Length: 115
Image (cartoon, rainbow, N blue to C red; front, side, top):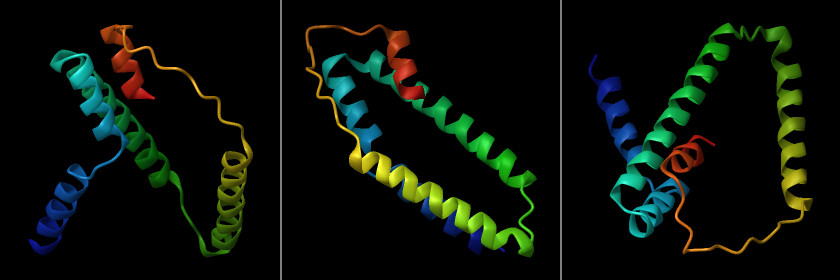
């Protein structure tokens, strides 16, 4: 009975301490802008993650994958993933100069965390 709960807690803690782009963004923001700016960024990330998880959970509960549509949905999903991959592979990346002297507004940091 408790095995799934313990497994979920372990997996959740592992995901919570994983090093990803948000961790390094928070680290850079806290070093350059201070603790308050990093807290605003973290709140923005939290709101964004909660919103996206809620939307995904809502639509996943509405999705009834019947056996007759499983292969069609698999093909459509595969084509979309290949399309996204090709788009990202062939697009030109614009390099921007970073101005470290410019201090962003707190609201801007919260919005950066959102998307």
